[in-house]
Length: 360
Image 1 (cartoon, one colour):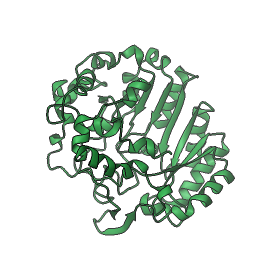
Image 2 (cartoon, helix red, strand yellow):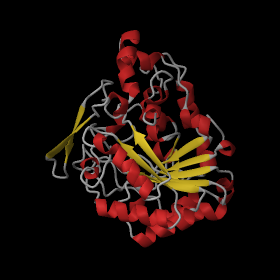
Image 3 (cartoon, helix red, strand yellow):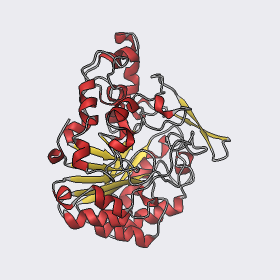
């Protein structure tokens, strides 16, 4: 897929832990109990130094912390890891995505100092005081406002990402003005692609639960077509053309997003994967046995988790293993049943791209 020397972007999931309980996040069951398959793994500063030698950091253009399951603000060593990357490459871009609901004002000021002007924080805030918590469950608005403003006031560059739902679409303009008032550089409306079920069908609602498993709010798609993800509207057209989304996935061409960016993804367990989407298939909470997911066929062939562990194994050696090339070679196979990696077809198929449409 690419060589160690080619890598220019690292997507780092520093932790699986998070204080929030977002109903469409795989770390919990619709906002309820935690995903029983994850262990709240977290990378330490020492782990990151072992994974990323100084010479490797010097070749990078970008390192960003996001991931599938956790928020960098709850990890113990987030600041130290950012400091390590910045100290060894003062030109690279550093960033992270966060719900902003934790840590002290001092912590946020220090983050602004470390990242500097060659980087940014993407604040995931989906509403205002009366609505943000409906999706960002357990996130307290006063903490969000305090922390974002502390970061910006300390010189940090901020982007506000606002996922549009039925319950907050009337607040988009007000939130955008608030972002300007607080000194946020960019306000990004996001048209969620998650109103699309695992069986490849559109859905209009998603039932949220609290930590006790009790149903709470019913999340709804925005009512305005202009606020909806247009890729989901195209699903009907593709179903008609191909006779079903599964047929489309079997036959579609794949244009890999991370190959274009020379990107690798490192999980909170210290495992090498090409991207967050392939890693995101590893621990689906609705499976009794999470290993039924197709991605495990590729991991097992690479030597299991031990074979792609970049804490105990050298990153260069793991990249020279079978995982990345086997995934790429699967794209030419005639169907998912015959070995084409399905998640690649779903996320990087050339005719259906809910991820890219979020930002349009």
